[in-house]
Amino acid sequence: MLHRFLPIVTLAVSVLGASQFDVLEFSNYGFQGFYRLVLKIENVDDESCTCTLSSKPTKFSGINSPLDQGVSVHFRGPLTLSQFAFYTSSGFVHGDDSSGDWTRQAYYDGPLSTADNVTFLTNAGTNSTCLGKGLTYAGLDGISKAENPTVLAENTLINSNEEFLIMLNVSCESSGFKKDCGVYREGIPAYHGFYGAVKMFLFEFKMPRETVITNNKTDYFDLPAIWILNDHIPRTSQYPTNANCSCWGTGCGEFDVFEALNYTEKDHLYSTIHDYQGSGDIQLGISVPGYIARNTNGIMKGGVAFDSKGTAVVWVSNSTSFDATISASNINKWVSNEGDSGQKPLLTVTQTAANIGTGVISSSFSWLWMAILLFV
Ligand SMILES: *[C@@H]1O[C@H](CO)[C@@H](O)[C@H](O)[C@H]1NC(C)=O
Ligand SMILES: *[C@@H]1O[C@H](CO)[C@@H](O)[C@H](O)[C@H]1NC(C)=O
Ligand SMILES: *[C@@H]1O[C@H](CO)[C@@H](O)[C@H](O)[C@H]1NC(C)=O
Ligand SMILES: *[C@@H]1O[C@H](CO)[C@@H](O)[C@H](O)[C@H]1NC(C)=O
Ligand SMILES: *[C@@H]1O[C@H](CO)[C@@H](O)[C@H](O)[C@H]1NC(C)=O
Ligand SMILES: *[C@@H]1O[C@H](CO)[C@@H](O)[C@H](O)[C@H]1NC(C)=O
Ligand SMILES: *[C@@H]1O[C@H](CO)[C@@H](O)[C@H](O)[C@H]1NC(C)=O
Image 1 (cartoon, rainbow, N blue to C red):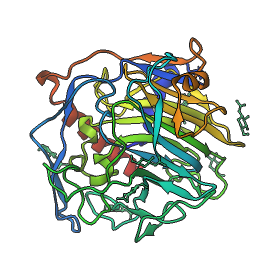
Image 2 (cartoon, rainbow, N blue to C red; image 1 turned 90 degrees about the vertical axis):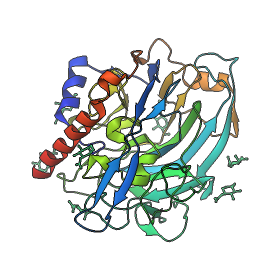
Image 3 (cartoon, rainbow, N blue to C red; image 1 turned 45 degrees about the vertical axis):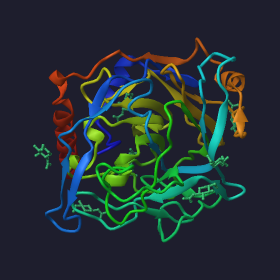
């Protein structure tokens, strides 16, 4: 369901006539709204597998919502991850050198093969008719199932259509609607995502041309991506066949940081928000009308910072460093293309009772798209 390649996305981008930037920026991110969490998951292992969304809405508001809550960070090949870091800040403001510094809270260092406060997971568990494959620990290669938490091996290349994800190393309590992590699929290693409304992720990675998988009919052939989801999504189901098995369709949140959207533009990385802020169509979402160039021959460094005023800024810069503390002025130096960045101010909206049905309508659309895609 997520990241399915849809013609409608293509259409909107070509109409906007995108051009290349090193910085992509959304302002006014966050709104007052709600989504629906999964309340029940039943008969996981047989044909009658089904899920129920809660009739009680989960409300949210404020800067960077709904992703001001815990989030998971996802990677799709062709990709090699060599560094990853998560930071929080008490008051960083994009462009303001005197605003809050950033403190590192989690770090993966590929060359040293060390991982502090991070857990590597992947969808390598048992397949279920409504939930798809279950979440497991990821092995050294990022994509096979491991029995215990395992640090991704240095220089691990994942290929087209292969994925892993990262959460914090903080375990969830048992599954339950009123528990810390809500309802989740039984049997998975359940972890908390990265918390805080004001947060930042840094990445050092490669997105080389696909050479290992040669079948260009593979889903997402040579279309790498790094993206962020509400952490409830991978804990119930990232790719359900029943939209009620995920809060995604009701708008619990997705932020695509660097995503190649289609094969014609496989070297253009777009940034897209999928929720209901100014878009009734969650599949389409809202993109910055511009892209970051994918370097298929070298290392890329960059990140995404969600600041204390609701500006989400995505950048690439070879100056990006992964220090334990980073001053606001350093970040602002790396992200110095102010005035020459792709920008998208988001609309201020309130999701009222009048558009309460939107999530349900849209999730049935995604279900419909999925059915169409399965027949293509
Ligand atoms: C990919 O996206 C570009 C720009 O949005 C568009 O011009 C092109 O037709 C798309 N390619 C395919 C195969 O849809
Ligand atoms: C891991 O988290 C703890 C507690 O938040 C923090 O003190 C420590 O610095 C973190 N480790 C890294 C490598 O960031
Ligand atoms: C998470 O990492 C911290 C710092 O490395 C460590 O103290 C803590 O025990 C870890 N927690 C879990 C649940 O693994
Ligand atoms: C998992 O099950 C679904 C539904 O039965 C099926 O469509 C899908 O191909 C299966 N996936 C894998 C990887 O076996
Ligand atoms: C896929 O491979 C076939 C055969 O090699 C080729 O004709 C076709 O153009 C390729 N499609 C893409 C999207 O590269
Ligand atoms: C999802 O839940 C809604 C509301 O209860 C229901 O109308 C719909 O049929 C469900 N969808 C599926 C695929 O079960
Ligand atoms: C960044 O570094 C990589 C790897 O060294 C190099 O290929 C790339 O050209 C550099 N990018 C810029 C903008 O200097």
